Length: 605
Image (cartoon, rainbow, N blue to C red; front, side):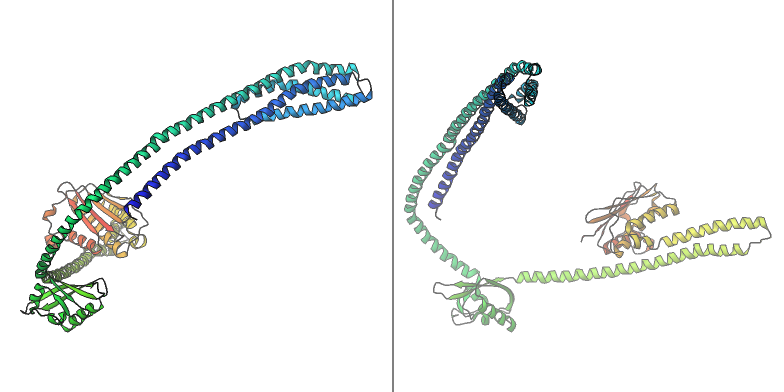
């Protein structure tokens, strides 16, 4: 689609939308007006029926009174029977019409057309109607029983004659009210028609000023733009010759640029077998070949290894489209080794034949840099390996020291207390009751100290809660037991998801690092409290150990202590344990302001 066709289509679509909007708005208001008008007309039909029924009620009440008087004065059975039938029909029609009016009034929504007033008027009318209706039925009943006696009928007849003018007066008021409502509806209908007429006029004015007039101006502008475009096209045709001359100059510049590239780039044009059709000047110098290169194979001139020769020939022969890219190493005529990044492009000519364009980039320096990077990487790997061996050796040494410490603790503490317990038991003389009681009290205290020593020694081993319930429960047990054993104020706050379980290796290392941090605080911090906090997010478990003790200077702790005497072994192994499970440890301490150690483990890695 050209530019002119696109402009025509855009203009047509825009005009179509405008006319659809304009005609749609008029249609909507016209249909809406017809809806309201038809609704009011239907209402008028119902009103005319009700007014007709109301007027008929007035006539029926008068007819009813007249027929009652005729029946009371009937002289023979024939006229009596005829008057009686007419009276029954009149009573039935009168009652039916009254009920119909009541149902109509009940069906009108409250507050519509002043229905409340009409219902009130019917409430006033209802006693008159019921009195006339009941007395009329009594007269009919007496007439059916051949009891037309003036003394009997007179009370009923007088009641009807007395209430009929009241009924008629109230019925007149109701009829007048219906007429007033009908007139009000007609007035409302006129107002709606005037309103719709005004809205349609406003829409037409709106469409003229905001739709049709802007469209006319837009079309005028479009025609003006087309005239300008025609003038521009004429000017462009005049400039075409100037551009052609400039193009010829650019072609000459391109030829010059080609010669420059020929002397700077490594490129060659070859056929499907690799025979040279054109060779760049710089590539010619690198390969050290003469001017006559026709019928010479580029791959043979490059003097590649047999494997690389076969590979390059295969790439040249198989290239049917796209770009192939690969790295090759070859030796120049001067004996210098070079690395070339060779790209092969398939070039189609107008005759239908195809050639291969071989583009080469000298990447020798990049290759040297890659080899140097590989050498440095291998060196770094060996250094890390040696560091891991050194760390492993220190870990084994620390484990051996821990075994010695446990053995020493059992020998010096528990062993001596057991020996003392044995000697005290053997030295008891049951005949000396007083000394026996004293020794028994001593044995109780010694047993209590022995139990405490055993619990302290065994508590430093892996607790069963860690395996059964996880890190959270194990740390709770540790805080509780250490509080009892050391009388330190050790507080644990756990806001983590207690259902999270990790690998046993992870939980063991987290427990040991936390235990080491708490034991260090107990031994060296001289603090008022030790606070252990456990938090967890969607991917990280965080454990912090905090105290308000005397703290220490981190700069004085060596990164890698040589032995226990130098200090810092505990912190070193805490870091090693966290590194082992790919966790992180943060240590923050200031002299006389306490220490905070935070352990973070990412369990979504």
